[in-house]
Length: 308
Image (cartoon, rainbow, N blue to C red; front, side, top):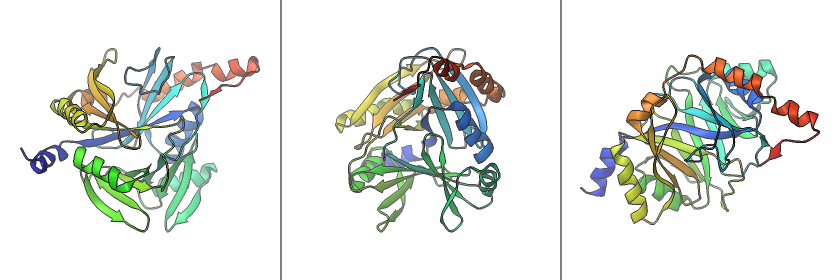
């Protein structure tokens, strides 16, 4: 099969799922996503030890994962919030340049709650999630479909990165902007897009570095891994099964693009089962935050939480 036909076949079967953010303050973060943006808690899970695919970063201890979005992950791009108990802050690099969503409701929520907003364009506001992550909010009515429009990542060589994401991962280019040095691409028009922006320098991931996740049919995972090996590209985690007690076991392969941006591909069939919305998500998150006495413990012992 020619590469062109191969790409045509895979593109329609791949979809954007979520971006992983490390959070140091769970309650402020919950306020931002729930009360400012207006997202819902889709599910919340607590883990006693680190993840085999380093979903929570290079940490071995207790951590939690909270999925938040405007709707279920089957047809919405969502955020995965990972919290490592005992780590209070992370150092931001220049790798994550922003997530853009459309919701005038989020703008009015921010104004009402006194959440800092900066107008940066016509009907466009910049705000920050706790930890300093930039979010752009388009001040227009929230669409019936997914309000999340794109995620922007910084790259050091736009041509090299575009080649990686299109030729090797099968994304199609939607728009190029020479002036802004950006390329917008995606697997489908109806999905959240990926924008790459040339930062004319080295990409620094700091310790806050995230990860973008996509799904594909399970049978494509080994092909994808083989292609990356053949092309001498970086594979961070070779194909592995991840167990979530009482839920579906998913298979993932974790890659890194030429600038070291982490990319997770997960088998779609089992992920759709794993990512089902848990109606108790809100309750579980609130309970975990309530039971997390780490702030009080650090204050009592006159110590500060670790900064990663």
